[in-house]
Image (cartoon, rainbow, N blue to C red; front, side):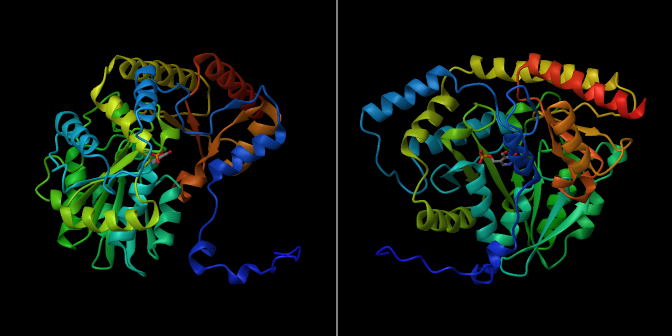
Length: 399
Ligand SMILES: Cc1ncc(COP(=O)(O)O)c(C=O)c1O
């Protein structure tokens, strides 16, 4: 720059795509908590395992790096890893994918989702999203030039999938429907019949169902079978999954996209053009995660289940707030509508006056207004303290 100031350009010079996206309320709360800068805050806002990655996985990655696995891999990922994903998916999720043609390894499920949407959505296409839903869907749909169409799920039925309402929202304008099972933020595990109604409706309109299954390894009650298993229209389903949640590997950025060959092939070209491949060392770690001992993974899942039961039982004992027992993932979606103000205002009071950080429900779409999402991916002692504080606030405000 030769000491000159760089050009200052106004926001109007930013692309329409990035101007159409905004920050997630989960991150907004995270930043507000940073400003508070109190080490004693109880963090319920972030959906990230508190466990470290199991040792055998870390060691496999270190061995691979020491042995020189530090280069680009093929764009679709190491053949051995694609085979491991195919074997895991067949045995645990009931669906067969050809590892050479129907699986591509990505930088986490976020990139898999991004690739899926970039591949099937043209500008102006609609993407149907049952809500409450993970906020990244909205931004990713907009980045693909798509138009999100939200279908609010019924709070009185614990936000179970209203398959008829979702099917009704699907039309010839629809490019895709995003289904998250188990759901972030509700922990709901939708059953097969409802999912099949949605897949059939999508297939009838030549649309895809993008099945976000990142929490499939953390289903406590219900089947981990993939949305693509058992449907007569598996060619309409694109599955997205990752090592992040089940194996406590968020920072390794390792996921995959699996589905019809033509979708995977096209997505792999976008992947090649944007990131080339998932990190090679992480790919070796993932092989160890998928094919190595599963005992440490089961121990983490058991810990989440114990925490889930503790959270739900404690909330049941606090008058005026409630939450159904989540069947999967590590979130409790708590009805706080009896308290004054919006869920964002309630979350801010909890932060500033009681030292508890939560994710306000409206961050997951209008259907989530009146709720707070609590992540129990944190130790039991902190959970106990956080719930004591929530109880103190509800008692103070409701008398
Ligand atoms: C519903 C959902 N899908 C996808 C992701 C992304 O996971 P990954 O770390 O594999 O990119 C998350 C992460 O929080 C999530 O909650």
